Amino acid sequence: MAELLSREEVPVEVDFYGLYLQDWDDSQVPVPFPEGWEAGPFLRARQGRLDITSGGHTHTAGLTIEVWDAEPPSPSGEWEETALTEIFAASGRGRGKPLALGEAGG
Image 1 (cartoon, rainbow, N blue to C red):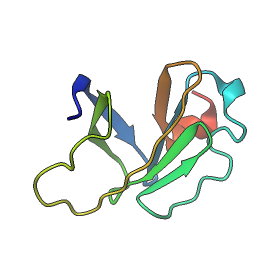
Image 2 (cartoon, helix red, strand yellow):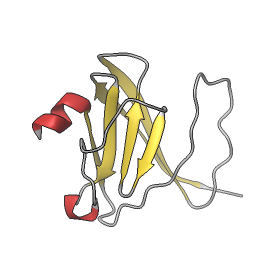
Image 3 (cartoon, rainbow, N blue to C red):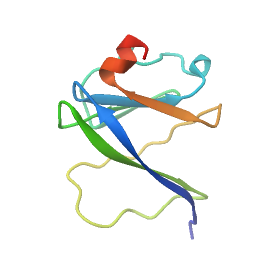
Image 4 (cartoon, one colour):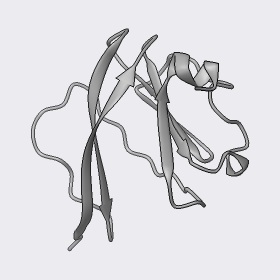
């Protein structure tokens, strides 16, 4: 049975319906954000990067990050939208920003 190793809840800023998460080390991301970003499915995986489209234009969302030692169980409850993917972060760290800040390089 899978064991939860760590869990962190963080507020994330969303603007223009989007935000991203990617490897802290930009050299490990062949197409760094915001290149290729477009509003689309809830979650789009790219090498070293995840693009997330939100239903709200500008807001603060809650993001829960969990690290498991194996495939986790499906979350309980009803969800408006769900998606599963994996991301490999060679640096072992990630970072994320809303769309406009990503474009500004902030």
